[in-house]
Image (cartoon, rainbow, N blue to C red; front, top):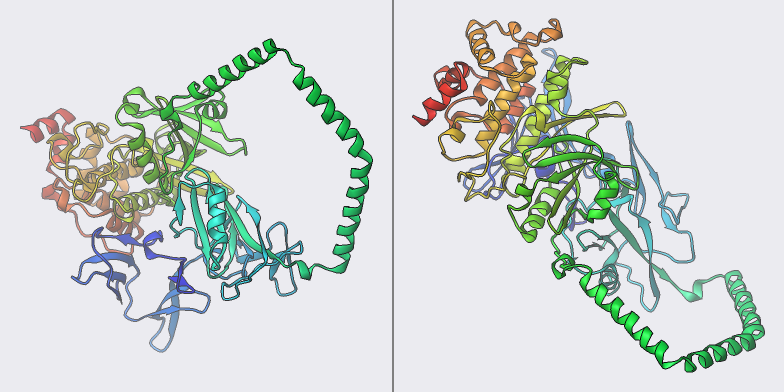
Length: 624
């Protein structure tokens, strides 16, 4: 959806409730039917879909504010029908183009939103924001002032523009002065955003809409500037009198000090002319040393500027050392390196992943930075946010958001407060949503290759519980052409490996689906899935005794229908043949209950049955 025909503000592809089934196809039609909303290609391939509860009659509407509504009629009785809102997008007022008028800053509230003006701007009786000084702005390029002085007012780094989420940089690799010149030279440019880390310039063109405050969990590190105009003839007579008084004072001060300044300048010139030849030589030696130091203090490749769209903040190694207090607090480790807790200058807590020497040597600086740009551009509610990176000399360091409850294995397998059943189900759904986005929501399909409880992180702030996948994209980015190619350097974790890992056949997103199935069983059971546990799960499934499976610490506080659904979904994920496993989008729909779960194919659980008899037996079967 676009505002004023040019500025995009919402897309189904970025909505957490949608799933992408086909990466290559172009959308040509939209279909709404009894099962939900579907975007279809011209050759009838399903590209995107939103699963909705079954309904015989639906209405789709785009309202005057720019929101998309999907409503359905449901019958309560034979004579009473109710119109139910099933889908609203955008769901947040502050994501709409004109919630707060031009330049208004939108703050989301539980019951709606609140509008204020940015600092250095004042509000009129109609909640219209204008500069607090004598300058003025235009909200539409239809009015293009000429022969006026142009300047820019900064809104700071905590304000973001509604359309920048979908905007592409107008230029990359230039400095902020060049970005300003670019806007000044175009009548239709009303302001710009500049991102220092990637040196990217985003122009705000044709119309000014609403702004919003960047949340602490969604830092933007972007400066926003608004173009302003000054008409000298419009300055009030009082301001002119004040300016004349200031000028008169300057003239009086200048006349009283002119003689003294002239004497000082003459004295300095005399001293300079009287310097000895030896002092000149010393001076030349000193400045020669300084010049050589500046040219050799850093290798030329360290000064290389790599300009890539969407590049996160670049940290120096010294900044990382300060952030972690010299890597004092270690909070985890994994195949790619150790993780340390840190704190940025603005008190934001972060997790610092220091890549191991082996991981750092796998690729050059350019390739590393390119991959980081891809990972940094992936924003999803269920994926850990990458704040920045360091690529200095041999150091390869990633700066992630900090998740204060640690990894799922700590809450699931270790002593302490027991995860409730509802929270376990929400963790499973959140993880599935994150994987679905990696597999089909990104520009390139990303196969995680190491889904396990240790890579599922939990966080709770201000009463809101979050679940996010970590370490995505570090193993390898798989294009459409190479997604079935096996990379011998990738190795997952024993117990979560799909059969294709052991037979050296093609690795795909369905390998992640298998690993997720093992995690699902562990979420139900509350312990690691050892061979005896797998055998017991299969036995209870065949006997339909699903309530024998949940973690005993739950003391029966689980819903039988939900336990049955989760176990069946897990068994579908664990099918031996990759093509028989569902997509992660379908897994989400089944876990949420919007799609019915069919009976798993027991005859395709041969690998799982062998696994229940011991890992070595399964390996012998797959390799023999």
